[in-house]
Structure formats: structure tokens, C-alpha cells
Image 1 (spheres, rainbow, N blue to C red):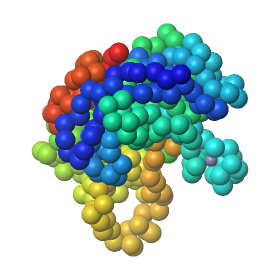
Image 2: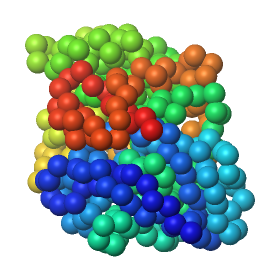
Image 3: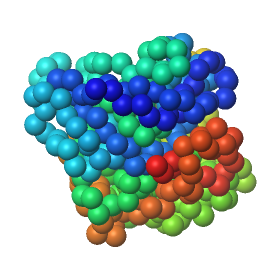
Image 4: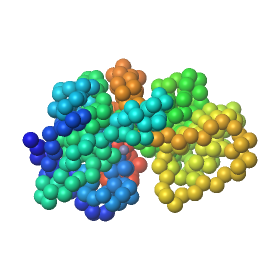
Length: 362
Ligand SMILES: [Zn+2]
Ligand SMILES: [Zn+2]
């Protein structure tokens, strides 16, 4: 059996997305069919549409989603029909060199569905964004891409853990190892940076300094746990962070912009032996220049955070529990809820400073 559903598709480079009918097969071995309830609009979706990731058009967009498992294929035991799940793009393989060494959050061979979803009109195979494709009434994924969480959370908030919010929280708690009493600075307070602030706060950081050039984002940062804010258009970010940390710099500085200039700020705003975490995504032409003597002399560690070094099976249920206890405000990331045919409009709004996430609710 197959399912005909409505979905948001990017047909060609730079062209506006369109609402299309797609065909979703029943789950085969190791796969799950998920009825999507909500899916956030992420920069990566726009990046796919602009041809910035690869040229495998048409893309089925959407990847920050939560929904309910409708059916599962042969051999699937971890999730069952009726489970409320967050979709992830790190369904660990258990076999690669990272998994075998007990570090599955680095898995280098993550799983996606084997069967293809297709465009009803032309029969063309779709490339699902990050192996998910959730701007759709239903999608087909590898069962390992479904992580069961407490149904009490709203789908709009829960789905955001599937990508950007997890990347930010994980950059703080997993990659940066932020702990009780640490001082943290976060440079760039968009969706990911704001999540890094919330993550640092929930991890027990004593000082959380939010840095951005947009005052509106700094207001949101305060709501999510920032104890200090710095507008780096008006003030030198490095000096301001040092001043706020007794002249030394922060224990952990999280770079959530992905540019050489802000990376350099992060590097010098860090205390000796501190940690820099790069979670902002750079573009291919960017180059970083730093005096090697400073890299050596200042010690500590310079790390990159990919998907917040998360392990969905460990992190998603835990973060949803913290959210339901009132300790992690995931609802604050949902700026607006929109319909499936409003994704293109959400892309346009993305460049304004007032949207953390637009979330499609089905
Ligand atoms: Zn693996
Ligand atoms: Zn994303």
C-alpha cells in the first residue's frame, strides 16, 4: 500500500517551494511511517532550496519534527504504532568505528529509510532533507530516526529538539561540557544560540553572557536564561566578555554564527585553558587566521559541535522531561505556528530578527 499526502517540495535551485502531492510507501524492514504533527522551519531547509547543499532536486523539505508512528516495518521493536516521537537525523548504526568504540553520538554511518518517496505528478524520486522530509502529512524514515518522548509536550515545541534547538543545547551541555558555576558566553543569539543559552542555564552556569548585534534577540536571550547581554555593534564583544568575567574571559565560549570574525572573538573572549565551541555553520569560502602561538599559549580546547553531539535516545526524552518540569522553556522557541502552505513566507521572515522558529502545525 502507498499513501498520498500533501508535502512541501523544492523543485529547482532558488525557486519558491510548492505544495505537492507525494506518494509515501508503507514501511519496509527497519522503517517507520510517521504522521507528522509539527515541523519547524530551519535555515537548512532554505539552504537546500537554494542548492547550497547538493543538486539532488526535488527535495522534500522539513526536518525538525514530531509526530505519531502510524505503522512500522518488519523487525522494528524500538517504536510501535501510536508512539509520540521526535524525528532525528542521527539514527546510529551500531557498527561504525565510532559506535564500536562506545561513542555513538559521533556515528559516521547513520540510517535513513531505504525506500523512496516520490512526486505523484511525475513519479520523480524525492530527496528528503537530512533524510527526514517532514513538511508532509506523513513521512517515511528509518525506525531509529524515531525517538519516543512524553506525549504531554506540545508537538510544535518537541519537534524543535530534532535539529536546531538540540544543536544549541548540545553545544553547551555535550560539546562544551558546561557545568555548575561555569561562565559561558554565546556569540549569536538566533535559534541555535538561544538554545545554547537555555542549555547553559539548565546545566547550572553561573554566568551566561549573550552577544548579538540585534537588541530584539538579546531580549529573548534574557528570557531563556542569559544573565548579561552585549550588543556587539555598540561594544567590543571581547572586551565586554572579559570585563564581565573579572578580566579573564569565559570558561566556555559558544560561537553560533559561523564566521571567521566571530570565531576570533570567541577565541579571545575565552579564559586561559577554556573551551571554544563552534556550532555556527560556515560557508565553503571562509578561512580562519589565528596566530599559532596564541592557539598554543592559551591552552584549552577548540571544538566543533555537530548536531550538539547529541545521542537522540539519551538526550530527547531527558530534555522533554526537563521541559515538562518547567526547567527548559521549549515553547519560547516557537515564535509562530503556520500552515503547510506558508513555508515560503516563513523563509522570507527568517532574515528578520524577530523569529526564532516558525513551526508548521498539521
Ligand atoms: Zn555508527
Ligand atoms: Zn535544521
